[in-house]
Amino acid sequence: MVFELPNSLIIIFNIIAWLAIHLGVSLLALQIPDHYFSRKNAWFNSFKWEKDGQFWEDSLHIRQWKDALPDSSSIFKKAFNKKKVARSDKATLEKFVIETQRAEWTHWVSMLPAPLFFIWNPVWAGWLMILYALIANLPFIIIQRYNRPRLLKLIRMSGLR
Image (cartoon, rainbow, N blue to C red):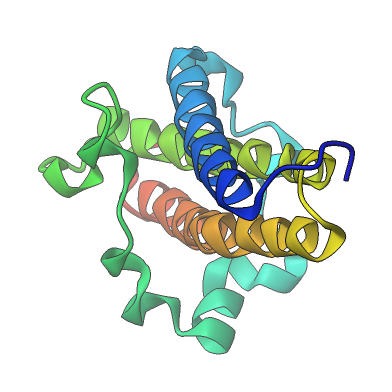
């Protein structure tokens, strides 16, 4: 811990810092052009062990809880609202795939500042902030990694490609 602060200030600062990180990274992600989130980026491809998302269903039963988590469209009007997708044409499905990549990127980047919390937190609280970053972001990353291959399969099967 570099700075010594009273516990009440540490708690308030942690809450404000995480809120700023989540909102700031989300706003930044919304400014990134769609073409950046190309499916050709290997980072967004399913790993073999993910079995095109089936791993997440088999191990975490993702279908039972994924829709209970909020999405960014409830906070940001510019965000893609997957609940209002009425069409299944190629352009809409392609946009949905891009938005899964944007969301995954957002949650990975949101975790990067977590080690900075060691600057003003005691070590145990710094680790608690690391744990928070994982708990707050990994479920959303997993949802994107589950949905994306299913969307791509839908595009392929429907002959839209």
